[in-house]
Amino acid sequence: MESTSATSAARTTRRVVIQRDIPEAAIVGLAGFIDRYYIRPNMKLIEEPSYRRVESLSGFELYWKLKPLGSELANPLSVTLTVSQAAIEVDFPGLDTIDKSLENVIERTADEIEEVILSYFENIKTSSLYFVIGATEEHSEAPDQRGRMSNATKRIFAGNTTSLFLSLMLLGFALFFIIGTYAVFVLLIVQFVALVFSDRIIYRVGNVRPSAERSLVTIASVRSNPETLKSISQHGKKILSQIREEIMRSATVAYSAVAIEELKSTVIGALLRHGIIANGKDITVRTRNVYRIVEEVSEKFNRQTPKITVANTLVSNAAATGISSSRSTVMITAGSLEDLNDDELEAVIGHELGHVKGHDPVILFGATSFEFLGRVFLWTPLLYSLGLFYFIVAFGG
Image (cartoon, rainbow, N blue to C red; front, top):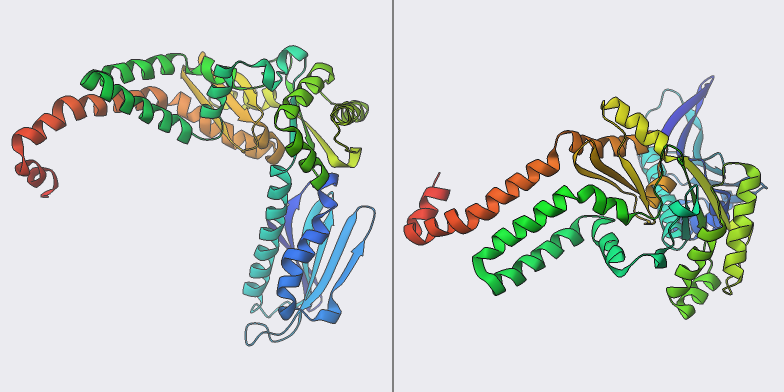
């Protein structure tokens, strides 16, 4: 959120930029969402005759006045919310340049509006269909072309590490019941193998694998209306795999206006063949030079560019793993490519590559190995031999 001021004589206008570069498809329902979840619940704080809504081809504008509210707001406060593809902006015109008492009201109002708008975009994101397209069919993998093991691996590694930790914990419990303390050595061997081949495991998680020759990745998102969601629920998730497979076979990276329109036609055709109606305004296409971004970040670390894979996952996330720069992989989710700009994406990737440069996976393996072995062969025998005295020594300080 950005904030600027424009001053004229004794009056000034405070402008707060909520978000820039708004997809055309996202603007359609935003006015109604703001009206329902912000304006109507706060009508007791708004001078009702002042509320106006003006729509145009590029977006819409909402205008209202906040009622005086005790000493914090002695006079009505004008608020103008402008939504266009360029940006979502909140203006507070006619402010006294000397009086700074309204700062808290302005910041609180802007924060509340931002919260509602972010909620709207999150709702769109979770109800949209996403298609990740690489430069060639070889690098655009439909979900049902993957084996069960690959899909299970994706569910474990993509998103966050909770599933991975739970999987290892369940494996540990099962092994302890079967082979006792020898389970420690089995777990360490499993973790060591996973560490050595972690770059290959993560690399197989993704649907698209950018390279120097095929650096571009296109994300096509289709905003779902209630009819679309109903159709998908009736046919089940299998229909999505079939649609993705058709799109991946015929679609190419969209790097020009003509290519974008061709991709939209391909997506619309695939959806129609499965009974789902969509139009071009519901589809947002974004192409990113993923390899260039990762390459530039790698150069800042003086490391060679790692292997790159893109997972068709809505969560905005990235991960990097490997035992060395030559044996490392960066995984980026489709959600990150959709939500983050180049600077933000570089920051996230840089953070993850920092773990690889610092050999954090190797250090973590060493620490967990020491803890596992110590727990079974050192701390537990000490506890049995020292009894209550162990707790006095351990926690007495």
